[in-house]
Length: 154
Image (tube, rainbow, N blue to C red; front, side, top):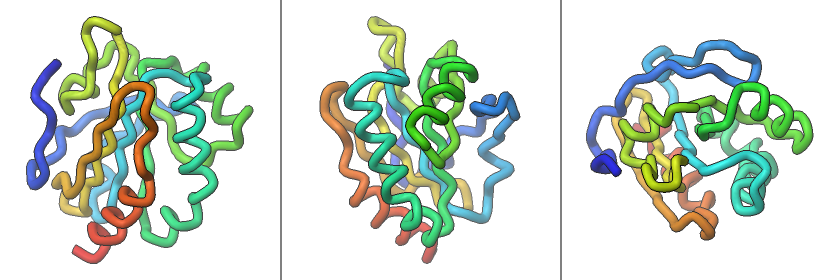
């Protein structure tokens, strides 16, 4: 696993395709807080719990002006099906080879998937907050929301 991104560091830029097969480039989102949510797999129990938490708290992310990008190794088409089935509101990005997860230190080579890492990036493109958890342990998105609010104030 690569070294994890550090708070204060510029977030590595990337371009990935979303569930609508449209390109999303991180650097084009400057000026607003961005939350990157690396996770292992669509349709898995802990991932589903986390993504539904974001869905249920969506109005708070919107109020903070944040863009939420959830990233896994799943395909555009799997993301589309999962998003529609669960009514997810945030963007799901396909990192099928794990290149972006590697750049952030979230890729598990042995398992061939992203580990749980959330990164809050401020409008200037710098990491402001990180939270990592074990594969079977959901992250605390209340803490992520607080970090988003702080990043929006910066």
